[in-house]
Amino acid sequence: MPARCWPVAVVAAAALLFAPLASAQDKPKVESETINFETADGVELQGALYKPLMLGKDKGQVVMAAAVDKAPVVILLHPYLGDSKSKDWDGLAVALARAGFHVLRFDFRGHGSSTKVKSHFWDRQKYPENSEVFSAKAKQKPLPVKLELADLKAKPGYFPMLVNDIMAARVALDKLNDDGTLNTSSVYLIGAGDAATLGMMYMTAEWTRPQKPTEAQAKFITNLPINGLEPRDSAGRDIAGAIWLSPSKPSIASLVSDKAMQEWVTAFPDMRENNAVLSLYGDGDTAGKKMSNFITDEVLVAKPKKGGRLGDLKFTMAKPIEKNKNAGVKLLSDTATEAEILKYLGMLESDRKSVARLPNRNLYDPPYIQPAQFKVDVKK
Image 1: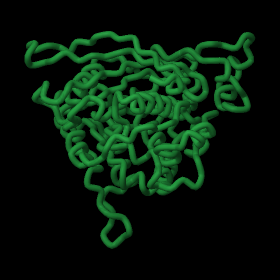
Image 2 (image 1 turned 90 degrees about the horizontal axis):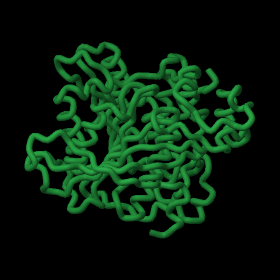
Image 3 (image 1 turned 90 degrees about the vertical axis):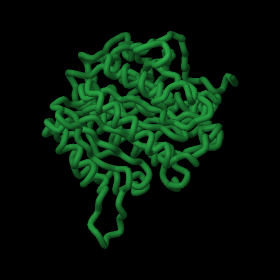
Image 4 (image 1 turned 30 degrees about the vertical axis):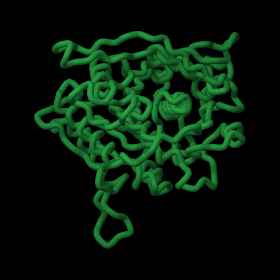
């Protein structure tokens, strides 16, 4: 592999994960390896990358990829102050890998194994949000080398900064795309709770950067948004769809307004047309139902009024999991939720079967996403 592909280290330490086995024939083994990558502002993130099984190895597969390197990718997003290593997340990752998907499950900054920060994290000129929100830590000598869960709990307004972690994950996967390992021309997001809001932010940001920058351009892409980008050349086209489990907003209700979320989509109408969204909620979860319907009906406007300029969205919808009062990650304890996820991804993949893997993404350092572009203030 060319050395230039790895300026942000993606270090894989192989380790086998075994799915719960009904029998050796019915449940093939799924491999997972540790993956490390770095955000634009110097946070070292860690996760697990699950390798898909080849076509024909399992009856439950929905992905019609002839080879692993052509199979799409799913990125799992745990809730803020949540845990990416829960058995429900792991179980979903294994099920998706059995269905033929590459799956990345990782810890957001300050969570789990993603607590190390480099000195430039505290750079007041480049990343003022970090030093302003954590002002006491930024004044310490020497500078702290960790950002921990207790720091985030004390500053809940920092929530929007985690969108940079999703972008770093995407760029790390793009390197593997360029290496011929996987396919980032079809990327799916599955997020629980308030991670749905982060996921919506991230999808918006992808419409502000090139799908395939030239090598010369890549050297200068350090901040988003990039003005003057044509939608047909946008990385937003690679987002094949998203699934939100009991979507919600961050704990500070005023941090992300309804109007702001609507304006994200208004600013990038191609996002509405190209990035399908399924919102799942337990039929006994009133809050999850309300937010699911808000995203579907008022943010993405899946079924607009007749006679307007907007058309119906075929794949964007809200759907209840019947006889279920759970919310967020706990929805995964119901086998019906996993079945709905696999069914939906299979439907989207069938619709995208003509989309070929785009090689040579060329972007080897993740750009920095400024929260201000989403009309949020992290200092709240």
